[in-house]
Image (spheres, rainbow, N blue to C red):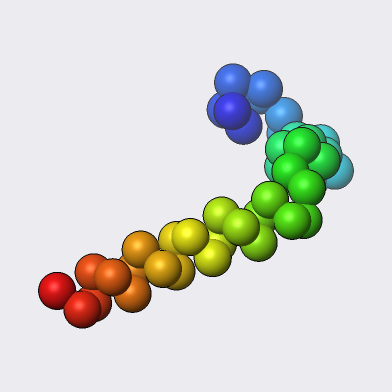
Length: 46
């Protein structure tokens, strides 16, 4: 994404990085991270 945008300034790159952050809601992120942790713990038990 960053290479395709060809942004060359710090401010511009930071703005591009921040765009996807606006898409995700905090509750959704918590849910995704919790599921990832459960999957990781399941693999340790094997």
